[in-house]
Image (cartoon, one colour):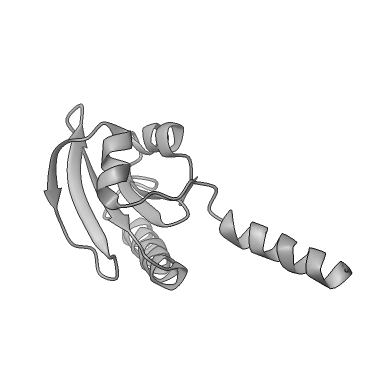
Length: 124
């Protein structure tokens, strides 16, 4: 009995690891954000990607069919963020990505909080 409780707990923790709800598609996340000018885009490893604006601020939304693809993109985003901060190309914190269960939204320091308020998730 204890083993099954541990397995259930482990599954629940893995499903909620990013803290943001799952969405059906990048388009669905764009709709929740209130995006305008939605266009198909590409992010390596994503199953669907759109670019859009909200109040003149640009976003790129990637949707992933599996955790492996999302995790690969997350590692790449963390590497880009670390590189730009170390190289002095962008002020620290300028580039951000908010991650949910099966999505990632690229945003700027000044707009990531809006994504968190609307979609939830975890910011890197």
